[in-house]
Length: 319
Image (cartoon, rainbow, N blue to C red; front, top):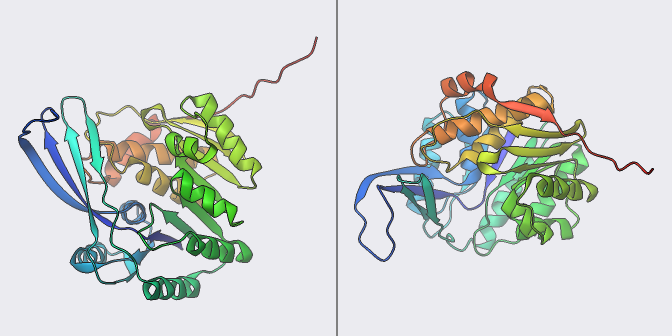
């Protein structure tokens, strides 16, 4: 079973304007609200693709209850821990003229120690040898990465699979505690913050992914927005280019990409075909408005149009 962990869930509010003008009044053209948080998004995409995940994490306040209720209504198994306070709201300002999003991300309420202990107990009871545990997203105030490290260590001890999708500083702290996820998934900006260097080009992202693998991580996958993704895996190194689509909003595309990748690997498609599926899902998310996710029909239509190819490494030859 794929278990997604969302420690800092959100309600995502998308506000669309024809053209964003700073320091002035902007007229709102459209507005929508969706439940969010990276782990929640991954679970919802997996369900849309026909897989039954389990979504776990925290669900503070009235909005937290709304998130759990909507997931249940969508047929997704849930195990969320409530606590006082209110789930954060992320505001996504979408400039239609250039198809660019500006996200205002709230930190979320402080999580009490008793809620952390309760989630830890629930999670440890659910981890099995066939588990794929996915930590995705940020941490709320009051949370320490020791939670990640302990859970990842338990998964590793059982020989199960784990995935970490988080920003560079969080990953750096997890690594410092000796925890090693099976797969590290990041975007190129997050990778740069982890390695403290520029990872903006394809070759620099590949070099960064190789450096991550030398740290003992089985596979490193780096997404690069519209430029596709690169992956350094036990089956080789790959570049994946997504199908060309008209982008409505790229919010959540990375989460969709991860869901497609995990589904492909779970179905034993191999890394190349799993990356192709991931790229199709990420592109399908980009076609959806605001913070909405993908439709399975769009994924199936886009799947043949993605390009995944091995990366040829050039070795210098002495004369």
